[in-house]
Image (tube, each protein chain N blue to C red):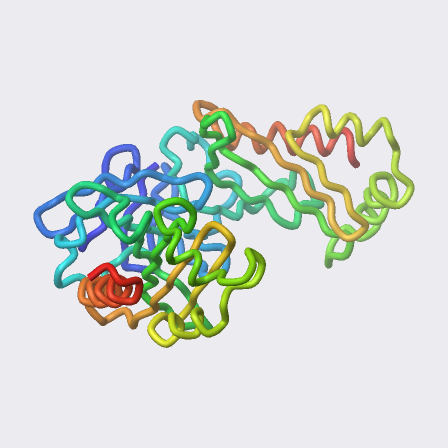
Length: 162
Length: 162
């Protein structure tokens, strides 16, 4: 993976033979691009630019079961930098069963035991009434493709998709 | 103006007269660097990269002697229009020009002159006046010389605030 700075300081990310155009997101203040998960084989966080966010696509779609959005970026925690894998899942509508498991009693407090099960696999879990965010941090020198597949397999099995 | 890569956490912004070393700031999640007002002569927002924050200093004849920080970056507003955003910070306590500072804080923060504040609000995009900090913000058109805009603001400040 290599960052390319083009004419007029436009950014692109070279992943294997592909050159992915990057777009500045004024809301998140980061350069964003889209990349097929399969094309990230062999890549690790060392060559991921600090100001980049790669949205994962599968067969050209950036929303794929069970995720509505998944991305890779870099995060600093206690002066150490990690590759940050973030998976977003909308709870209402398509994931009613997951939502019912997270909120068996009310909409206010997610079920702690269910969240704890997720926390055994992920480093962070953020739950709101409508949205579930699952986060994995991995060392920069570790290949993140394998971690993405591992997370995807785990979550599919967890919610009974396999 | 041209952005060049050094490594993952360092980049160079090449201006007409100077190259500015930019370092990745993990707190602000931006590439940050410093230069003098004069170094920005001829630089326009059109080729100013996103995700870069420049702290501009005054040298030689100090045009407005109370600036503690002048920050230059490229932002996109809610109408999706990109601008150069210039942010001026003045603090009450600093090593130099203490009498001048006391007077300014008295006029704007302690015993505020309504007319003067209105004048500042008419001139600037944003004016924030607190007892421990005065902040002004300007938007500069992408085709305008950034140095000329800094001088224009400094002249306004000198005429109205000193």
